[in-house]
Amino acid sequence: MRTRLVAGNWKMHGGRAANEALLAALLAGLGQPRAECAVCVPFPYLAQVSERLAGTSVSWGAQNVSEYAQGAFTGEVSAAMLVEFGCRYVIVGHSERRQIYGETDAAVAAKFAAVQAGSMTPILCVGETLGEREAGATEATVARQLDAVIARSGAAALAQAIVAYEPVWAIGTGRNATPEQAQAVHAFLRERVAAAQADVARGLRILYGGSVKAGNAAAIFAMPDVDGGLVGGASLAAQEFLAIVRAAAHGEGLKEG
Image (cartoon, rainbow, N blue to C red; front, side, top):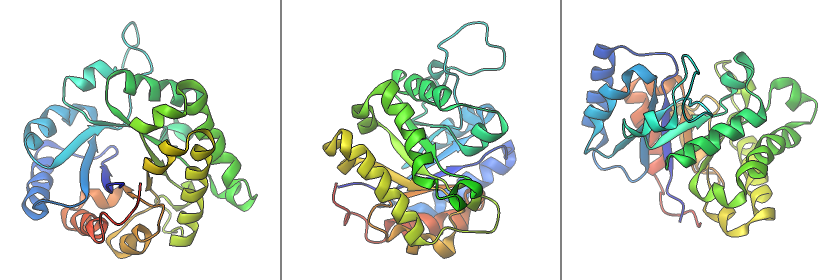
């Protein structure tokens, strides 16, 4: 069985007081969720978040990591540093990192390997731009991004990883992929992994990350190859995020791994 996961990506938002209020409201409303819940927060707030969430049902993680273990890399944060703050997850290859900061497939694959070397779980983001979708290159794009990781770490490494499909054209644009569009790409990704290692593909959790909201979460999560969500802006509003977690919990345990 694949347990659903809803992971919040706070991006470059937050403040100590705002974080405390958000986490308090999240914990108060969460109870014992049937879906797994996590938040990926900016580096400066890892201490606060790890202290606040320790012993709760909510996991936490980071939004990026250096591909290097240590050295003269000013401004970078290593996997070992994240481990010291109890991070379970690290997002790698988010479209904003790829587009704004020029991270290549090779760099993302190196970061994926660094996260796993630190015994944490990478959340590998893949996805196409609007131009790529309109050109019919969606499958070629996500295959290239996924294959770079498989070439570096092997398909078996995906057994200790999560993949998140984020159509770039549906992030912060007001546009959304339909549940059927999301399912089509998720199914393709699972089939791509299955071609290399079928047992890994069956257990691989693939999240949807294109503007997930309370209003569309249930329909998206109902798709057979969608195993939860990587949530951006909606993770900054406790009640909205809680509604998404509840949508993921509905019918939890019905997806065969």
